[in-house]
Amino acid sequence: MTRRAFLVNLLRGGMLFTGLKGFYNTTRYQLQLSRADLKIRNLPLFFRGFKIALLSDFHSSFLVGEAVISKAREMAMRERPDMIALTGDFVTGTNEVGGSKSESLEKFDVKYVDSCARALKGLSAPLGIYGVLGNHDFWCGKEAIDAIYSTFERQLGVKWLRNENVTLAGDGGQIDILGVDDYWEKSCSLRDAFKGLRDDTVKVLLSHNPDINVEIEAHRKRVDVVLSGHTHGGQVVLPIVGSPFLPSTMGQKYLRGIIKDDSRQTCVTNGIGINIVPLRYNCPPEVTLITLYGE
Image (cartoon, rainbow, N blue to C red; front, side, top):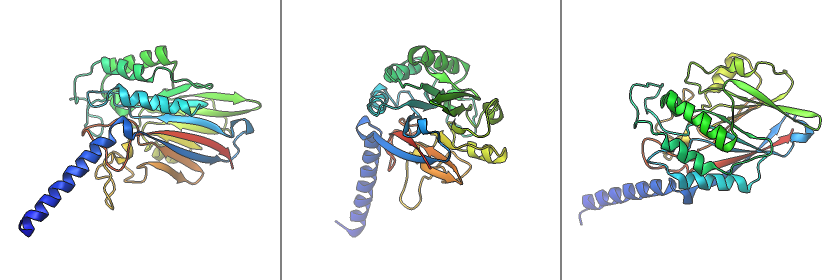
């Protein structure tokens, strides 16, 4: 074998290994549990040790079946969370960044909503399940939005936060849970999500897209924790380069994990499903368990 042929075969082997490893990362066997311990200033005593299970980016479709979503549900429930946050992209829509609704990856089929809800059936938490939609949910159109809202509310008891908030109270203390429509949608309103809230309470914001931090800064809102998905952790993350394509105006800043902006902490989960290509590389699917502690 010539030196050239050897190098070509080596390159092909490397590409094959990368592809196979990436495909393997998409399966339920690579689903992992990630833990994040967050210290929160002025956190009421009742909420110290409060556990939130964050599940995002299911992308129920012909690429993502019930097995991996069901596995994620089982993993979350084993941790006995006090609250569950679902941060969007329950189904898959167009792949046009910026929200073009002219074409879809596939014609919306309500069976994918039903499949996702069926796989998540059994999710429960003492202080509730709260949800927001992602860009793909909106891009699938009104039929998809209505189906997601009604199916998940009826079958799982999800409380949807469409630019609104709820207050969780216990033993003399409280925290506020806020949610906004997807950041790329005109309907997204951080201002509305804050209506009626006191300034001095701990606030946890559900936003599919972590770029909501741009709005938080612009409006000078105080948020203690932001829970997001959207990036898929990059889905394909290369050494040194990072993720070649990331749907964020902030570059690699909100790729994944815990990002601190002064006292505000953003938790970006890798999510559960996949989109565009049937693989993950160096960022396996995950369920994220957040535990709040006092500072």
